[in-house]
Image (cartoon, rainbow, N blue to C red; front, side, top):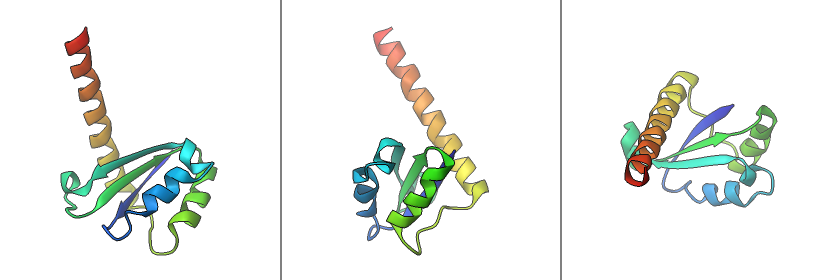
Length: 96
């Protein structure tokens, strides 16, 4: 399961709190510049993990930072995964 959050520049420090948490920090957390996703000035944060982890994520992020809507999140997630696949393919080309 995954959820995607859009953080403003003022909220960006929350990423460090996610990463430093004993439980949440062990999950897959991906950070991307929001300008690549029609959201300049923001940071896109993808958190992948079991469903029960997201209560802790919500607790850390606090009120007012909610996951983005499912449809938009699915599109962003697809783009991020495509980037990762393209990067892996490029590395294979370089070292293959």
